[in-house]
Image (cartoon, rainbow over all chains, first blue to last red; front, top):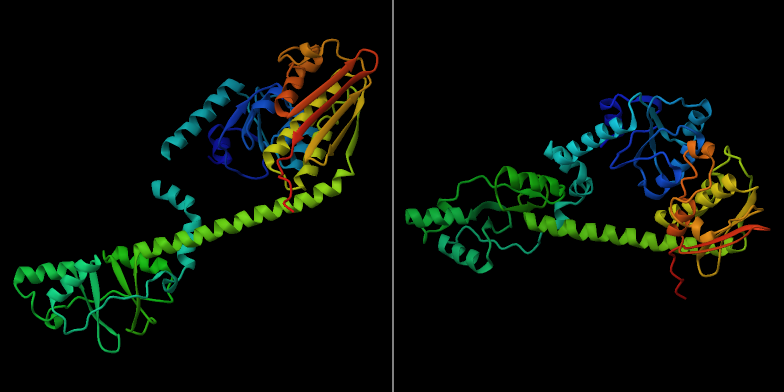
Length: 114
Length: 316
């Protein structure tokens, strides 16, 4: 489903929104190696790790969209790097469990329509 | 909603039905009758050829009517099956000009609920040059899609050939990086440069990702656990990417233990950043085709990971 639809429905705060894209799966994880090993390319990644290394991991895995949960502080440096590398960044005050649940339900509903 | 999805997915076919002309899809071999034929003659022909209708043409091949199975059934019903058709056919004839796109033919077939359309020479002519059915259109579409698929295949073969040349060129020029210990700001640098480097070679995305993951984990290991070191990435004559990572110590006391998923010696500070989960070396092992680790508490650690680039050897 469209990233913009997820962002609107889950009321995510747009920190960096470069390009809308099609999202087919997601991954939730705060351990870099775990995300490296298991996240799928082009997925939406839900995490509390809002530092420069998250962008590096996203780039390596071709992840175009990251959602930072628990209202974590996102440093200017991180935003700058995301803009340079065209990675979409979002933030929410909800926790990872809640956001994952919301996105999962949206995606399920979309697949059911197909 | 349903039609919205199918429209989204059928863009190639949608494009093609506008591009392909009726002329390219129609069959030129037209079975027809003139006005002197009887319904019975036509019925026998339809049965023989297993078709459901024929156009009626005058001596200049201009269309004057069409007779379908329905008309023949009516003729049987009303008892004029042995009569000439001249007096009875009265329907307007639906045709399509040969220079129109097949989409017009599809629309007419659907709108008028007919199985075949006589094709005219042009929009202001009645001269018949062919006949078109839905199956003619589907056949033509398949041929065009097939030739597009072949072109894509050709292009892929060309791409691998390009990467062959580039690979030959870079065999002699490995990438080298210095990696500092405890330097989180530059973490991921080796992986992202290496990724871009291999992207230029036209290697499959999946293999590039594996190379990037191995580089990233090796780089993070030097950064998190050692006093600093270096990395080198090169391609050998057998089309393998070889990733070397060296550090100055302190060395891994038990390599087998370090390869165990979940084993970690990382500090609390490192773990809070999402590193040191004890998955670095296991990840490298998982994504490399071959992995060698030598470690000594005196000289440090040497890691060598090999990933096949998946490029077949050139046929000479």
